[in-house]
Amino acid sequence: MAVGLQSSGKTTFAAALWYLIDSGEMPTSLRKGKHTGDHSYLEMLATRWEEGWQVPRTKTLQQEVITMNLKDPATSKDVALQFVDLSGETFEKAFATRILGRNAADAFEGARNLMLFVSANDARDDLTMIDVAMQLQDNTNEELVSDDRSEEAKFNAAKTPRQVQAVDFLESLQHPPLSLSLDRLVVIISAWDKAPEHNDPDRWLRERMPLLDQYLRNSGPMVRIYGVSAQGGDLPDLDNPPAKDDAAGYLDQKQLLSLAKASKRIQVVGHAAVEHDLTHPVRWLSGLEGE
Ligand SMILES: Nc1nc2c(ncn2[C@@H]2O[C@H](COP(=O)(O)OP(=O)(O)OP(=O)(O)O)[C@@H](O)[C@H]2O)c(=O)[nH]1
Ligand SMILES: [Mg+2]
Image (cartoon, rainbow, N blue to C red):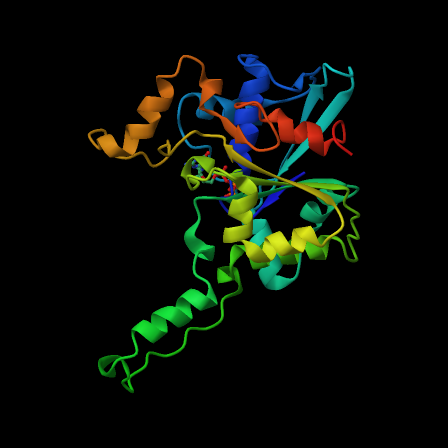
C-alpha cells in the first residue's frame, strides 16, 4: 500500500509502473500478470505520463483502489500490488485532526507491507533549528532589535515538517484502532532527478529527514530506501499548461519525449535495482527477496 503526504509522488509512481509493465519495453524483475476488471483510471494516468504531462492531483474524496497483478518469472509466483491511491491531503488532515476517515482506514486493513513516499523536491524540511539559530546569530545587530515585532503566527498543524507528520502517521497506524503489524517498509524518495550528486538514497534520508531515519532504524519492520525518478524531470501540467512560447516550461518534457522508449525516463537507485526497474522495490516488499 502506498502512503505519503501531499505531492510526494504516489500517483506518478503508479502511472509509470503501469506503463512499464504494460509496454514491456524494458526487462523488469516482475512482469505483468493476468488482469480482469476496469483499469480506466490507470490507463488514463499512464497515457498522461506517456504523453509527457504531470498526472492529475488526487482529490480528497477520490480513492482509487487499483490492483496490479504481477508475476515473478524466477519463482512463477503471483504478486498482487494493491495500490490504494489516497490523496496526500487525507493524510495531512488525519495528522491535524487526529481523525482518519472510515474509507481510508478500511483501505489499510490487513496491510503488512507499506510503501512510504517522500519527495526530494520538497523544501519544507530543509531548515533545522540549528540553521535558524545560526541565522539569528548572524542577524543580531541593532537595526533588527526593535520593538515592532509582528504578531506570532498561529500554529498550523499542516505546516509541521513532513518527517514529523510521516513518523506520526507510521506510529499511529501501529496503534489501536488500526493496530497494523508491519513486516516490510519501503521508503521511495521520489523526484530523484532533483537529488544531490552523491546519489545515495540512504544518505539522503539520514541527512535530510533525520527524524524519520532514526525512527525507521528503531521500529519494527524491515526497511529499504530507494531513490526513484518516475517522471525523469519536471513536466508541465496539462490542466494548467505554461504558455506555448515558454521554452523553459517545456524543457524537460521535450528532452524526455525524445527518448525512443518512454520507460527509459524512469530511474531507480538503490539495492542493485536495474536502472529503470520500478518493480524492484515491489518485489522486495512482497517478500520474494531478501529475508
Ligand atoms: N522532477 C520530478 N517531479 C516529479 C517526479 N514524480 C512526481 N513529480 C512531481 O511531484 C508532484 C506530485 O506528484 P504526484 O504523483 O501527483 O504526487 P501524489 O503523492 O500523488 O500527490 P497527491 O495526489 O496530491 O497526494 C507533481 O508536480 C509531479 O509532477 C519526478 O520523478 N521528478
Ligand atoms: Mg496522487
